[in-house]
Length: 282
Image (tube, rainbow, N blue to C red; front, side, top):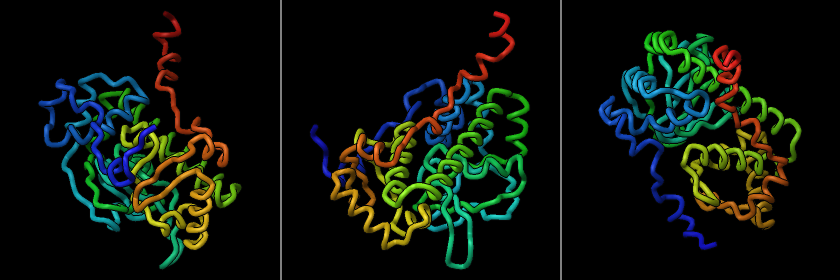
């Protein structure tokens, strides 16, 4: 297999889903093209119709930019809008002290930053941009009207929170019971699958704008230990990290090492459809 160089394959462009879908081109043209990863993700959870996708786009009030290191939502705050990541990379984290934090999940384009606060009202963790990012802002009042008018949209958003909970649960197991090498390998596997689903990964790699300090905060290991683990994984022929690029040298080996099973990332969109009365009495 011929692989491009580490910089080239990571920086080359990949068409996002729905970019050539002319049905959407007149609805919020400044917002909708970059909203496609989010709409595609919702389509995995519920079969949204074209008018429901239009309504979702029209609920966006504005698009804002966040610089690297900027706090998007603060723990303890009560947001009045939901943030959807259009492009960039974010970290969900709990602050333990002035200089300590635990990253509890990474966010990629198409993810919501604070959907749980739409129902819960209060953020139980913070969200920070790890690189320059853009976010779509959906005010809660618009989101409330949207979910009341379109039950399938509400169901898709609900399933988004279920997926988030699945990821959080897996991270607890990762930190609590896996070895250092297994933790890092599992996190790499998860990130690759999620980026692949969003159409943002290469065949055997992806761009990952995280530092060893971020990995330290995500795995409960020291930066020195992270450095040693990455070296061991490279020398073992499993993966190569070059700047922000990750090359998966042995995908099957990484999965075996970490015991990675992507089942927790997979939610069948047909689950509730099959259980609906129309299907039961058909």
